[in-house]
Image 1 (cartoon, rainbow, N blue to C red):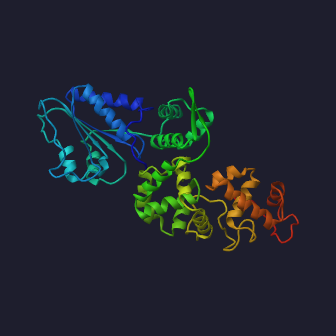
Image 2 (image 1 turned 135 degrees about the vertical axis):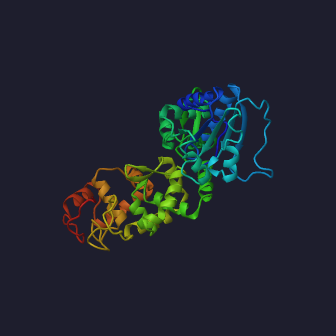
Image 3 (image 1 turned 90 degrees about the vertical axis):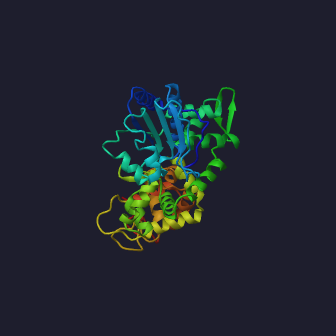
Length: 415
């Protein structure tokens, strides 16, 4: 998700650049090579593809570059000056997941024959997304594909990238805020530049410091625009997952979406390929804290509350749960929670997390809520149970009603 930033410095990709240099160098020795640069949107594929072209030029290769991001102009793919027909060449293709059958034949097939010059194809692509003809070529045992997979940046490289955008290294407080981007290059740069433009960052001499922790409007609008470019099923899954927290089990997500898990697999593949969700020890988790916050902030609080309320009453599917969710309705049937009828499921979960010793801010992070919303629900819990402090609430959760009039007995924290 989010667009490209072509002027961003290339940071944290030294190993990938070394490997590209070695692979492209094989072409000068007469070998034909197919290289793919793979990663979710915003991971730096296009940037590394441009670097590969620079390497190819330095090694003396001819260059042909194009993007497969849309239909070709009349006449097919762009022409190039072949120059010396025996000189090795490189073909660089951005957004290669959009290649169609004609593209694959013209750009991947051995069109020059066995006696032609050596060549290398370098394809930047999003993995597991579309382009069946290209997938067939890449999976062929004769293709000899070399894959370079891009992940997130390490903290040091991420802060160096932020320093390039700011003109000064971030201080500790600012580095902590920028760390919410999880090392995702594009979101990190959008966050950094947006905060700088809106006065949330001040650069004093040789250090950049945090002024206020506020999401820049440009980043919020870009995520909104990006989400609207995907299918309705994609947007629905992403927004429901965000409402249920930073992590959620696939079973619970399917229940709230009221769809059999098998029917959701194509959409899940699309969401994972887009770099929104990932499998985190058996749970679906947002790639980084910043992305989750951007999506939840995009939705009105009333919508978030409605989705969470639906999650608390969604019927369980048959068979064992993949992962139990705190606060879900159990064997006592509808209308009850681990805390009895006086508390809603949301309130019961929050009360249980207070019992675990979490602060309002920690609870907000755990449940994907704002601290203000947690405080609002906690005040309702106090009023319903007739308590005035967190200590009294913990005592009730630990030992039962504790003599508070009108409260159910045997209160227990959620499992």
